[in-house]
Length: 137
Image (tube, rainbow, N blue to C red; front, side, top):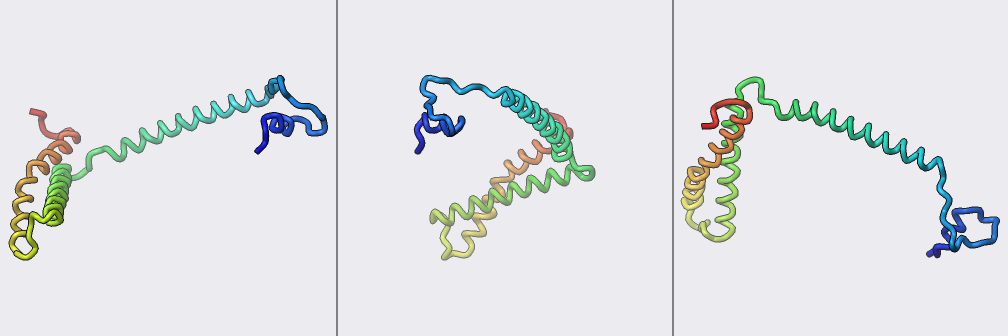
């Protein structure tokens, strides 16, 4: 590992035999210009990203052109099936559902499916309302 004196000496002219103790490094005027160029490039990059994000936001978060109601219903059904599967698998893993009796898993699935209908409706309506459909009352 280099000491501080060795670092400064290696950065400056190596032919001179002196240490830089007590001296401050001399600022390079070109480094300020380089820093300003870097700042301008960073500002331009941020502006490009903002412009691209606005374009992407407009494409990603727009409602579907055809059948937005069907899309919302399918998303709600997907949420309902996902929650149902997670609940049934969790209950089976924790031992609440006996795999020895074949009807218990089906009954648990049907009960969970009926119970998660509220969440499916909530998600479907929220998505439909975000598309501009329906009233909020």
